[in-house]
Length: 345
Image 1 (cartoon, helix red, strand yellow):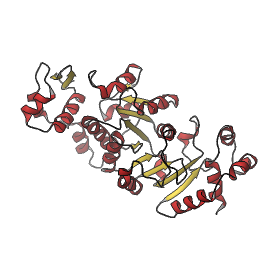
Image 2: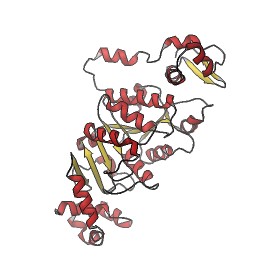
Image 3: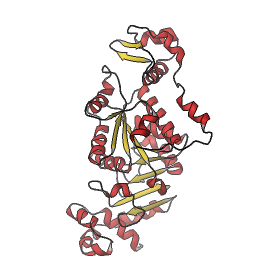
Image 4: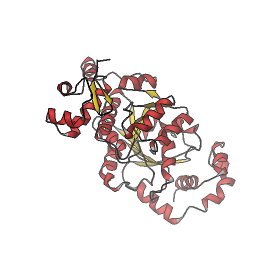
């Protein structure tokens, strides 16, 4: 095994107080005495599985002492000493925004994630997420439709979790980048995901919470963003929507309220890239993405979704999606019993 690989695997095995000591050193050689015990923990299986993983595709290991290690991670609490990277490693240096939310996302929540992921990617930001079900999947899929995306894993880089995301993970590796601090062969464990979340927020300029309940795991990423001095943003929602209670709590606690890509870019102090078609794209992105005809089916008093579905003849999933977009545009508002029509902001 090459010395550089042994060094990386040794660093990946470092725990506790030694991690803090290593971060103060300038090179692997300078920490030889500290690392000696951890080197013995590198097993033959570690070596075999890592070599096997490295042999396929565009893959590499980036460790603490390398110049390619992301600067954004160096100053967070407990930064990973090693990153296993599959795909375009240069994307780690790209300005990015993390989109997070519920695994059991509603159709409107998934639509909102898709909308922001697509248009933030167009604007020049790299959209990142945790490759979970629900909001994460919607964000990755939409970003991939127009550009790259970054996924941070809570498993080894050779594992597909959840299993139904196997193809999506492969697509991200081919058209973006996969990142993990866990050795190849590492399976999913509950305590891995908070560790994943600190990397997700640490790499990003800010975190955007799309849809989350009060006890959603995505709120841990929100907390980490604040601890790491990153921007924290949240989509507003109805007080009657259980799925948005986490968002409302974050907004009460000072998270930035955002309803547009422009809001996100302003909050991150990110200057949007000029699209190829310039004015044409700018005009398109400012136009309403919602179907204005649906407004005719919403009254000035509370109108239930069932009533709107019956009046419009559209599927409930489509109606729910359109109502979210109309609400984001300030044309309807969620109230007890449904929605009401309001004036444009």
